[in-house]
Amino acid sequence: MEGTRRADIRPGIAVLVELSEDKRSGRLTGGRVKEILTTAPIHPHGIKVVLDNGRIGRIKQII
Image (cartoon, rainbow, N blue to C red; front, top):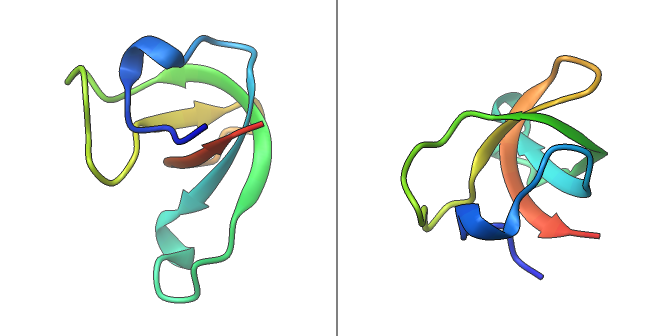
C-alpha cells in the first residue's frame, strides 16, 4: 500500500520512507511511525512522518 493517504497512517505501523537526503538516489529506509507531520488528508509525494529513531521522511510504502 502506498503512503499518500493520511487516513491509512497510524503511529506504530511499519513503513518504508524516503529520507530527504535520499531523494536523488531513491533509497528507502524502514522504520515505525512515531508521529505524523503532514496535516493534509492526501499528499502526492507521500505523507511526511517522524520514525521511532527520529529520522524524518515521506512514506513510500506501508509494510
